[in-house]
Amino acid sequence: MRPDLQKSGIGSKLVKASIDTAREFGTHAVIVLGHPAYYPKFGFTPEAAAKVKAPYSGSPAFMALEIEDGALAEPVLVAYPDAFNPT
Image 1 (cartoon, rainbow, N blue to C red):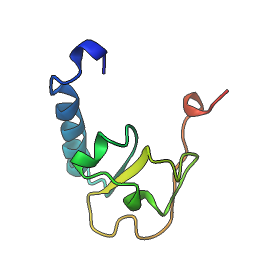
Image 2 (image 1 turned 90 degrees about the vertical axis):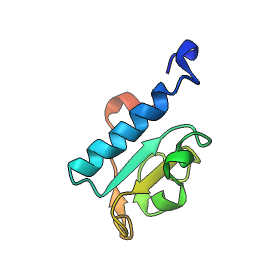
Image 3 (image 1 turned 60 degrees about the vertical axis):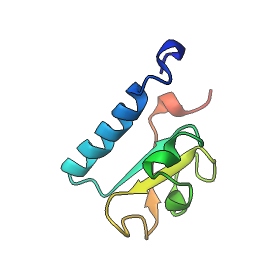
Image 4 (image 1 turned 45 degrees about the horizontal axis):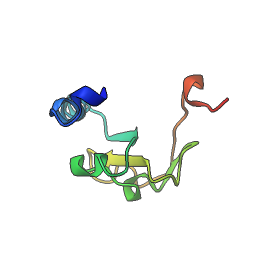
């Protein structure tokens, strides 16, 4: 979010709309790599991502939200596009 638009509520609306859309499409869980102080207010936690294997696993910025209870009870593998890989 551009600094001049922060604290305007736009980011929250986008996150909520994304979660709602994921729900509508039957998605069982959502994973985010984002600010550890921002995403928990939407229900994302590092604990929910504990069984998710990804390049960022274990980072406080790597969080998940179970839309369906138990969706992340079993190990899950997440791959990121090359744009996320450090050079």
